[in-house]
Image (cartoon, rainbow, N blue to C red; front, side, top):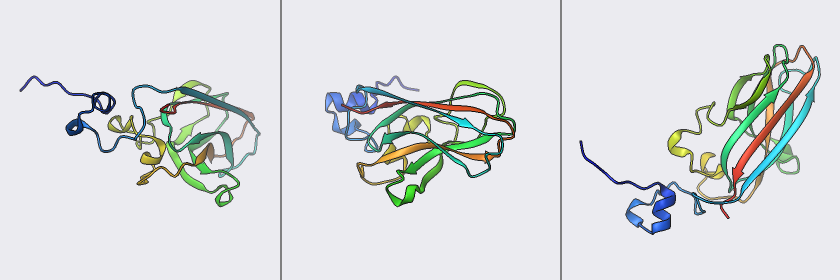
Length: 172
C-alpha cells in the first residue's frame, strides 16, 4: 500500500495539472456553479394507463445533475420510469432515454423526496461530475434542453399527485 495525494477533476482543472485532468469531465466548472432548482407537480387520475407521460421541467444538456427527488401521494399500483424527452417542438417530443434516472420507480406508497439520481445505474459514482450530454454518450454538448418526465410503467388505480424536484449545476 502507498500513501497518495489525488485530485478530483474539478481541483485538477483549478490547478491546471494536465496529467491529472479527467478527459471525461465537461469543459465547465465542476466544483462551483450556480445551483438551479426546478420543480413540477402533476395530478394523476385513477385510470391513467401504462405509457402515460408526465413532463415536469426542462434541463439543459450542459448542466450537471445534483439530485432528482420524487414526491407522491400513494398511487395504488403506480410505477414510473423517470427520464429525458425531447421538447414537444423537437422530434415530436420523443423519448431520449425514458429511464435515464429511474426505472419502474414505485409510486404505490407516498414518497417524500426520494432521490432517484442513481437508481437506474446510469449515473455511477465515477460519473457524478459529468453533464447530461456526456451521460447520454454524446461526444459534444448539443446545447439542447430536455424535458424530465415520468412514464407510467404501472397503471394508476387511484388518483394522487406526483412531484419531481431537480437540482442542477450550470457551471457558470
